[in-house]
Amino acid sequence: MSSHEMTDNLILVAAGGTGGHLFPAQALAHALVARGARVRLATDERALRYGADFPAEEIHEIASATPTSSGAAAKISAALTLGKGVIEAYRLLGKIKPRAVVSFGGYPTVPPALAASLRAVPLILHEQNAVMGRANRFLAKRAEKIACGFPTLDGLPDSLRDRVVQVGNPVRPAVLEAAREAYPGFCDGRLRLLVTGGSQGARIMSDVIPAAVGLLAPEQRARLVIVQQARGEDLARVQDAYHRLNVNYEAASFFADLPHRMAQAHLVLARSGASTVSELAVIGRPSILVPFPHALDADQAANAKHLEKAGAAEVMRQIGFTPEWLAERLSQALNDTADLTRRAQAARSAGIPDAAERLADLALKTAGL
Figure 1 (cartoon, helix red, strand yellow):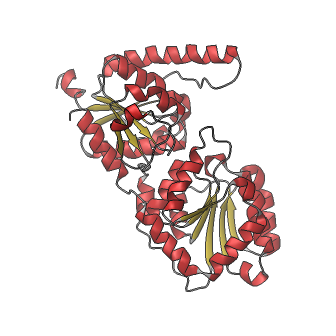
Figure 2 (cartoon, helix red, strand yellow; figure 1 turned 120 degrees about the horizontal axis):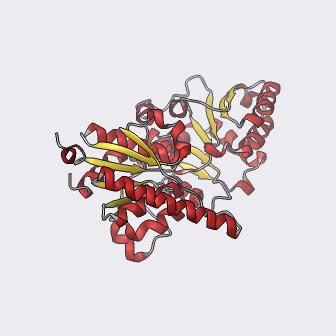
Figure 3 (tube, one colour; figure 1 turned 90 degrees about the vertical axis):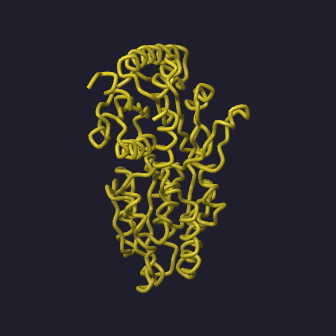
């Protein structure tokens, strides 16, 4: 087989090294490999620790930096590192000759995406959030297609609207597996809560939720089963609070089987990062969402709005997320399980379980494969 034929069906996936970008990239890579395409990953050094699971024949680390820190020296240094990354990526693309580049946002994707543009390799951007991130905004005019996770996409110039295709957010195989689990019944009278803070490991959840549970009547507390993800430094006080309240709970700083835990829950309390919101919809669980207030693009608030509009989630700004407010909501949930069941169905109707397949279609079509 000539080297030309070997690289003829290669697609380069570019993703920053956080779970929010890597999970959808990984789901796309699985879908492409299943269809006989070859996949390589361009990323930064953070992703190398997740790399073992990534279905790519090779992972290329490209120099990258985030030019958002204040101070002229830091900005110049970041610009130089990005410049170095563009040269590395340009050489890499010359060597491996991908048919298309699919980029998942975050500054580490800027060098490979710019290199694709310089080498006239078709570029697809995938935007997970309902508000376009800064790296993708910077690259948008160079992209042939802009694939988006939600029905609306803010922060994009009108002149580029015709390039947008809604595909949804690709979810991991574990999420699709969890989506097969039916919404749990209430025959034992218990309400199962899952609390997760996303990668920010939200301290607010550790502050507010045990305090809210403490405000409930003892007979209401007795009906709760709580699974809570808390940051390492918050874990002991969360465990201590539930222990004192005599609540049925399990708390840990990390759950490897989070999608399965989500499926087992009647109600999920969470931040509203794109992957959390997409997983809640695909698995079909009602939620109380508290958008991360310091997100630069207010993307979490925009993501949450989609589940709120579907009638699946209640959204509360962090400033109003108090123990008193939450105690009232939990009390309501304990009294009206039919409403929770209805909201679970609403969540599922907003989900796009085949997003990875839709994005793979778009990638192969754009690559002319």
